Length: 150
Image (cartoon, rainbow, N blue to C red; front, side, top):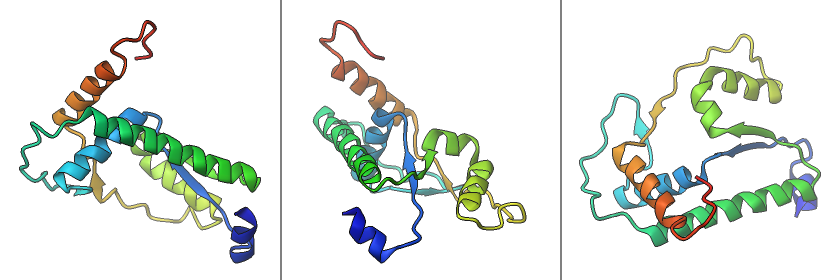
């Protein structure tokens, strides 16, 4: 796989974004599927959608497993190709937006120092429902565990 990539993109660079908290990722993904709202522009309010009966342990668990497997597959691709990507951690990116953008520009050998970094145009979609689902999933996922992880 990596040989084809090397041939097509001989001077490629990779930026890999990950999220530490895969439970929150899976919940966010399921909530977006249920609401149809994948992004929220800064200053906009979420659509008024009743998600009170939309929680699904099975769906969130599936997405939790899927995001973990997808990430493992990407990591394996990097190992196979001896690729060292610039890794961006979502939670750090949110906290250090401008610095993260500058790090990306530096990695791509673009003029990071003179670039004007505009504020993010999107805002987080997480809300009280997201938090409720995260906690509920966390409890259900570890229900019979002797040594709970969280």
